[in-house]
Image (cartoon, rainbow, N blue to C red; front, side, top):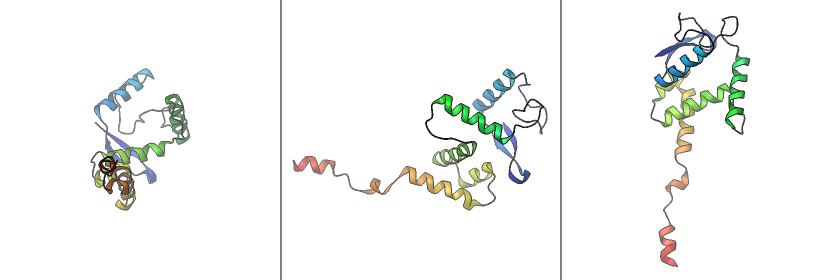
Length: 140
C-alpha cells in the first residue's frame, strides 16, 4: 500500500505503508464513520469535521494526547516522530536514498545527519576498548 503525501511547498510523494499499519488506519477510519478505503487521491487520511485535512495544530494535539496516554515522560511532537522514523529505518538497514525519498528531503546531506545519529547510537569509543574484565579476575 502506498499513500500520497503532500509536504512542504506542496511537494507530493508516495510512501509505502506496512500492511499492519494500513489495517490500523482502516479500523480507525471505520470507527470514525469513514469508508475504510480512500476514495480519491486527494482524500485526507483523517479529515476534520468538514472533510478537509487536519491542521498541523490538531495533529500536534493528537500526538501530545497519545504520548500522555502512553506515559512517555518527555515532550514529543509530530516532527520528533519523523526523526524517530528516519533513525530507526536507517538502524534497521534502510538506505539513505530510501529514507531521503520517504522524508522528502531535497538534499541527501539532510538525510545524512540521521545516519551520523544512528552510528552514534550503535557504537561509541568505549566499544573499541579492550575488555579488561578477564584481566582483572586474573590479577586478584
